[in-house]
Length: 226
Image (cartoon, rainbow, N blue to C red):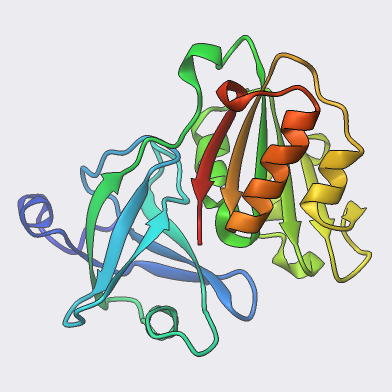
C-alpha cells in the first residue's frame, strides 16, 4: 500500500488522497483511499466531502475491515450536486472523511448459530460487500435488486450459490422481478437473521413480507440507504 501522507498527519487531519477509482458501470464506481489506521466495523458508514467544497454525503464502507484500502461505492446521480463531483475526481485529489458512524452490521451473537440473509437494492449492497469480505466462511445469502444485470456490482466476488441477482427490467439476472417478488416466493429457515439496505420503499415492503412469514423485528436489521 502506498501512503502519500505521513501517518501522523493522516490521523490529525481527516484528509486523504484518492488512490484509485474503479468503474463498475457507466455511472457507478468504487473510490479507494489509503486506510492508514482508520478502524471501522463492517456495516458502518462515513461522511465524505471534497477538499474545498462545503457539502458532504454519507456512504457505507465497501471494503473489508482488514482490507488494504478504505473504499466506498458511489453512484452518480443525474442532476445531482455531489456525486458528479466525485465522478470527476482523479487519483491524487483530496477528500475529507469523518467517522465511522452507525451500528448497522452483523449480529455477532448469532454469527455462527444463524444464517444471514442480506437484502439490498442498488448501491445498498455496499455494507454487505464489506461484511462478506470481513467474515470469511459466513453462512450468508445475498439478494441484490437492480434494474439491469450490469448493475450487479462485483458479482463475481460472491459464491454463485450465495448470491441472487434480481433484475426488474431485463431477464438476464438470476430472477426476473423485484427483490420483494423474490422474497414472496422464497422460504427461509426459522434460524435466519435478515439485513435490509436500500431505498425506503423496498425496506418497508420487505419488512411486511418477512413479518407475514413469521419473522419479527428482532430478526430484521435495517439501514435506509437513500
